[in-house]
Amino acid sequence: MLMHVINIGHDVFKANDKIAEKNRKKLDKHLVFSLNVMGAIGSGKTTLIEEAIRHLKDRYNIAVIAGDVIAEMDASRFRKFGIPTIPVNTGKECHLDAKLVEKALNDIDLATTDLLLIENVGNLICPVDFNLGEHLRVVIVSVTEGDDIILKHPMIFKTAELAVINKVDIAHAVDVDAEKMKNDILSLSPSVPVILTSKYDRESLESWIGFIEKELREMQRNKVD
Ligand code: MG
Ligand code: ZN
Image 1 (cartoon, protein in one colour):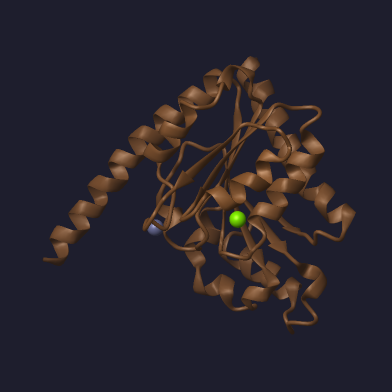
Image 2 (tube, protein in one colour):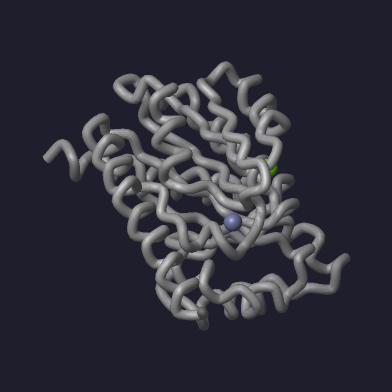
């Protein structure tokens, strides 16, 4: 019985990977750099995406896929910038998958897009298993989640290509050591870049935004060459 369940899971992931690969090819063809932004509810995914849009929208054409159980709430926060925003309601599903992104990509003019920001559904577990075709996997964790949150969710921190520890301005108030959180991440994934952010700290936001811009430029340069 257990074997049966495992086999189903394996096929689901294989089918998902195939569609993810198609998504990736489509994005590459149009030089669209894409981020899969993962993290728990309340970690600040929407806020950090808003900051990225605010600072990059004058230089790059940005589109957003807002995945959520009820996606419309976050989508309106992105639409106010006047950028294409595709809400994806996942209903009972607690993650985006490649097929949902494939569908959403049909509603985006990729030829005129430079940067695609994908906000995944808020949890630290199953989004890990579903490749979307993105170029960069980001995990955002807030100090309010407690400093044992990272070691409780090793897989997402092992597979992320950028880790952000957010709301560090209130670390002291919630009795959490952001440096310990950073060390926990590095113990799971020694070479992953870790950025500490607070929406009230301009410089920390510039690190986050600068990282995205650097990766975007690198991807576009490599594909053009
Ligand atoms: Mg959100
Ligand atoms: Zn899920």
